[in-house]
Image 1 (cartoon, one colour):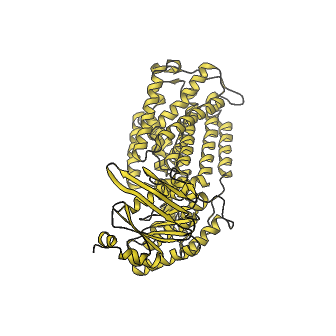
Image 2: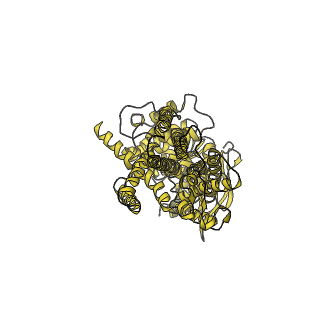
Image 3: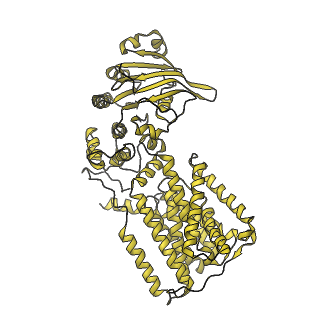
Length: 329
Length: 240
């Protein structure tokens, strides 16, 4: 939705076009850079970019439900892990290409999102959030006890050889994650700028009033939980090839759960670019802190930033920017 | 009265052991103006919630336009033209004034307005006097403007029956007159209106018929002057 400001001129209010060509072009440009420079830079930078893009997908997926509809999902790690373990299960059954594994992970996690939504969306506020947290715990318990995918001891995944025209498999993973991030952002933009986004915004602001205005609350929320789950699952699908050893603590990591919430909140939940900005800023900062201080410190910094933003700037960087622009206008 | 557009038959609603509504019957004809009154706690808002789908009654049935809508969710009732405004204005706070009106235009109508959603939204804002504030945030509106926005949003859903739940609470006399005039104009367009209100001046001016609820039961239903002379009404509602 647009920024609101008192204005005496009645506007011809129109939603921007749902498809964003600039985002598509930017995404393809990033892919081109990755293809050009991927073979020339240290693999560390490719891994760094991969992690940031993974968080772009996660925070964008989270924001579809948490930001647009106002339903805070604490179960991110569960959906991410479903994606991971879908890939592992497929890897054990057959040599499935990564894009197919990502699609399968999206379907599985999306269906879990749909089921979770159907069972829990009559809950509101903190009760919904607790239910999603419980879902992650249930999923972790199931995985820990499912020996086919490694159970509690974890599973090793052999990273395949480089695929032409990529110089390395890490470069391939990076390009795949870039495309996935681009798709997630384009989907978020399409939702935000369509009647679906307007309906979700109405639900977020006042669910009773939204229903009284003809908004089919449950249907839209189910759509949001399904898309949210699907993107989170797809973000997790390449992870086994990225890390090569997956166990429940790494797949159901607290860092993933916290970051997926912190990044949209710090960036701003009202628009698609808030979660993207939050993921880039926070993801980059975390990696710098991991290298320069310690891997434990980065989560501490995220926690502090989250507290600061929630209390001082709850609308995130997007809100600060809009307020600043409003003052200048 | 011609065939009713709304019929509530024996509507009973309980909260635990408390009976909020006890077999309430009500019929509203096309284009009718009905005042629904009663002391605080008499069940007016509960009745409205049952009619519009925010609550499901334990017993009884609600028929709207010859269809049993008792089991339908609120949004489906709104799409059929059974529309309400809220006692306390509930704008979509992060949407602009015009977007607030666009929500029902996009969701409650079976097909888009012939003039398009943007034009129709501006026409509605114009009709309620908020066209100059189309791009404002609801938080910047005055209390009477919020009430108007509430009615404008209801109007955008193309109602056959509008239930205005205390649309004038907290307003000055002149502002009450503005809202009554607005409701009369809507009614003039063929929209039946149920006005739930404590401001008796407004109720008496607006209503062709008055229904009185006391302790979850309907105790009177008829001509406003006769109802106000009803012994039970005087005792229960006016405290005489």
